[in-house]
Image (cartoon, rainbow, N blue to C red; front, side):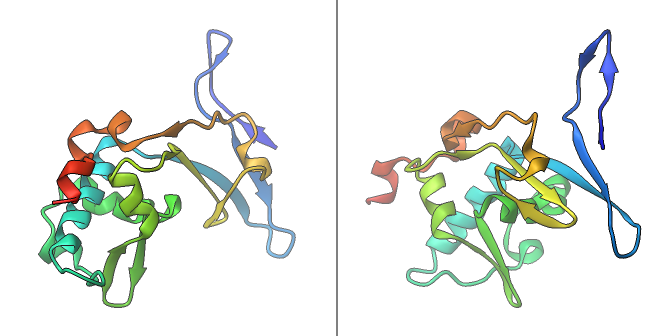
Length: 153
């Protein structure tokens, strides 16, 4: 079953996939998550802080080691949905994909989808009716882009 909001005959929200669990009857729903400027700014802070460690990235505590807004702190875990960060027992680390994204070397999807608490990738049915756009860091936040001249110094 799909559900969406309609205004003057046009769908204005992403259609959500809803299914009933065959085991317990709970409704399972899909959620779309966007990669936005505040998340990219938070990722850049993690990148910069871990670049200071010289070598293997040291897991960082978000509250004590980064200067995040409440919004950035509350939504930081969504960066995992895009494969940009990883949460370890001792803190957060940026992934190689996250480093390459901040350095402008790769474009990634500006949307991630979860269904039943798990990240799902296309062609999962939760992605139907969702437009996928690949974006480089500078298309979301040009200030967070670590230009090649900056990281080769």
